[in-house]
Every structure is written in C-alpha cells, then in structure tokens.
Amino acid sequence: MGTDHQLKDRKIILSTLWIFVTLNYLYCDVLGLMDSEILKQFLTGTVDGLVINKNFLLGGAILMEIPIAMVLLSRILKIKINRWANIIAALIKTAAMILSLSVGSPTGYYIFFAVIEISTTLFIVWYAWTWVNTD
View 1 (cartoon, rainbow, N blue to C red):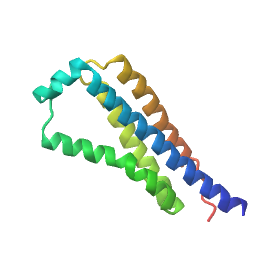
View 2 (tube, rainbow, N blue to C red):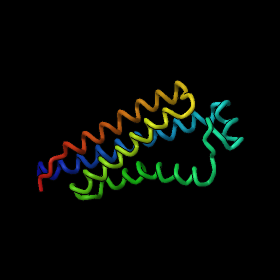
View 3 (cartoon, rainbow, N blue to C red):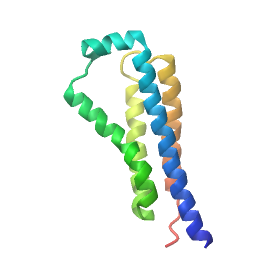
C-alpha cells in the first residue's frame, strides 16, 4: 500500500506543480497586457522586435499547451513515460523562459515571474528524475 500511495502522491505533486507554474505564466501575461508600453507594442503587431503574427501565436499556443497538458498527463501516465514526459516538458519550458529573458528589456515583474517559473520547472526536472520506479 505504501508504494502505491507514494506513486499517487508523486503524480499529484507533479500535476500541482504544473498548475502552479501555468498560473504564473498566465498572470505574467495578464500583467503584460496591463503594461501600457507593452500594450502599445501589441497594438502595432510588434513587441520588442518580435512580429506578433498568426504563426507566432500558434507557436505560443503550442508552447503553453505543454504545461497545460502536463497537468493531466502527470496524473494518468505510467511511471516510466511520466518521468520522461515531465523531464522533457520542464526542460523545454525552462529553456523557453531563459531564452525569453534575452528578448528586449524584460520588466521587473517579468523577471520576478521568470525566476519563479524557471525554479519551478527545474524542480520538476529534479523531482521527476529522482522518481524511483518501484514496478
């Protein structure tokens, strides 16, 4: 019973971490829309030199679907694929956040959220990596 309980706990914790980091991604984006300087750029279709077109938005949608999907997948996948899905997804999101810090001049609130998001995804990598397969 203990091992099964630990498996469920680890799945729940990973899923909860993905919820936490997703909420941080989303609220940072909401604040960006409240930032008049960034909002003005959005209205022109170019933000810090990036053209915000349909292809860019599709890429952003795909990138955001990763943590959203991991909320569910962390709960339902079997341990081996679950571990690797969490590690790969968290590494992709970590790399994306680190790269995003090199675009334009990140604001204080963006850096604040980025630190939380990067810390969380790196913790997910470690937490999934240390998940011992007891099958």
